[in-house]
Structures are given as C-alpha cells and as structure tokens.
Length: 442
Image (cartoon, rainbow, N blue to C red; front, top):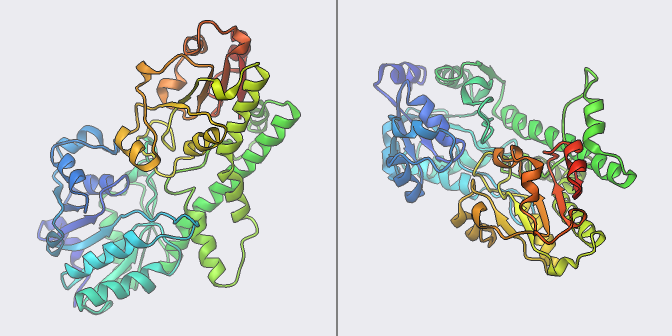
C-alpha cells in the first residue's frame, strides 16, 4: 500500500486531514492547516463543537479567525473515515498520585481505530513518555480497526510545542520535531507539517526519540524555575529583593533569564512526571527532576504563608481579614485554568479558615466552579480588601498603577496596614516603597 502520495492528495484537495482533539493545541493546528487544505476538526465535547461552529473560540487561541475558518467541525467520529492524515492532540494529564493518565490517549486511539481508513497515517502530538505511541496506542488502533500497522496504516509522532496565550511563539514559527515509524512515513509526515510550519521541521530517527524530546525540554524548564524558586526563598530569608538579584545576574551573557513563580499548566507542571514515571519502571529513580517538582509544587503554599505572616505583622487577624486574589489561570493573558497552582494558594489559605475572594475575568466561571469549587467574582464587584494577592500577571493587573492598587483596600486602613503580595514582581520597587503599603514579592 502506498503512503507517499498522501501529501500530494492533501495539496490537490483529493484527501482530507483530521484533527482529533480541539483544545488549546488542536484548535490552532486545525485552523492553520485549513488555510491550505481540507480539514475535519473532531472533538467529543459537543458543546465545544457547537461554540466553534458558531464562531466562538473559548480557548482564545485563534480569536476572530474562528469565524472565517474552513475547518469542518464535528462531534461525529464517523467523519474521521474521510481523512487519510490524522493528528491526535488530546490532553495527557496526571492522576492524583502524579502518575500518567493515559485515558484520553487510549480513548482517542479507540475512536481512531473504529474509524480508520486503510492507507492512512496517524500522528500523535499528545505529550507522552517514550514508548506510549508504539506500545500502547498502536495495539489499540490495530484491535479496533482490524488493520495492521506498517501494512495497512502507519504511525508517527510530533510533539506539540504550542504555548497557550503566547502571540509571539505561535504554531507556524516554532520549529516542529517530526518522526515516523519508518523512512516513508517520516518523509510524508515532514512534508505535511511543512505546509504550515514556516520555521521548518526537525526530523528525528525514531518515534521514541521524538516522545523524549518533549518531556525532556519541559523537564529542563521545570528544573530551572525550581532553582529560581529556591533562590527566591533564600533571598526572602536574607531580606534581599530577588528581582534585583536576577536583574543583576541577567546582565551576564550566559544568564538563562528564568524567574521564580507558580509552575502549573498542562505541560511544565505535568510532563516531568511522565519522564520520571517511565524511568522508575526501568529501575532509575530521579535525583533532580522530582526534587524540582517538589519545590515547584510547594510554591502556592509558600506564597499563602507569606501573605499570612505579612497580615499578622500588619496587626490584623488573618481569619477575619478580607483577602482578594487577583488571577486564577495558570498563566497570564490566557483563559486556561488547567493545573493552576493559584489553587494551592487558595487551599492553603483555607487551612487557616481564610476564604479568599477570587477574581479573574479571563477565566470561565463555570470551569472554575466545576474544577476547583471556586466562585469567581467579577473584578468590578470585589469587596474592599485587607490583603491583595496578585497571583497572575494578566495585562490588566500588570498595567494597573500602584496607586490604583491602593484603591482596592479598605478606606479605614492606614497605608502600612494594607498588605500587598506581588507573586510575579509586576510592580516597581520604588513605586511600592513610595505607596507606603506593606508589600511582599516572590
């Protein structure tokens, strides 16, 4: 069976590409490909499909482009039979014990197997540990389809590198790592991705290598941020401003530019566990990666403890204080709340009987309530506070003058009784000092 004519079929309009999973990763891929070829966009979430069909992009990744895209959105898995090139971009979270949750990938594999046309190439983009694509996904697809991999269809892997909310490093200008089960599939996969990836593709020799690329690159970032978080905690104990230390360090040519902060989201806060879990199965216990995870997972509680300490030193009883938390999403200027570490701040405060008021106009109130039990309050309706924790660097918060921040506090408080916690070091030190407020920043 020929697999080296799929690219030509897509370009000529004779064949279709299907995207399985239309979240923060899948949606931009589908929309970009649809500018050049026929695309079927499939997702099991019927509500999401209806929104897309009505020109509503809840991910905020493509914006107004959703209204004019040629993507054929559907929740009908039978439509996948029309495609000869399938890209899988479903989530790969972790369970409560931080072990990989391959449920979505297995479910997608089953759906694909039940609707796979002979002569197709299937490419997984979901982040997994090395071996998952070939050892777990392939057998499921073979069982459901009755088709033999390598004979009736072929498999490949290309790790997603989309950065939600990033308008600079977008799909088309990030180099794409690609791989296939053999030379024929690898070449065809490269040609298809080259349709949309302006930065070019980077072929690697095996699928396992491509799988490793993703978990290693995010584990590296996680470890570097963990180091910065340790530095921040040390500087805090020494009474030194971390941001000023890092500004000085970053004047050197080989400084890496990392900053301390809350490390959540669906990649950096998750992928290291996929790597270490796979290593454990092979008898190797991580010495660095898991320690980095431990540091980063502790930062929400650390920030909450710092806020409580500042409130006590300001002379207030934290239990009776009105604490307002600005931001819930895992990163700035993005509606994605998955694995948000702001929730760790909330949970730690609740351990001390403090029920904070949380506001985030970027986040979906229904999702916040369903996933975390958090009732979001519109920014315009938040009450006057004793303590304000700026947890996420949304542009609305970043652009807010410090004197405007003071208006969020209770009028009867003296300036030195107003507690401001600046997690992201958004505000200038001279302005913070001039405000007279009691402040702490990571």
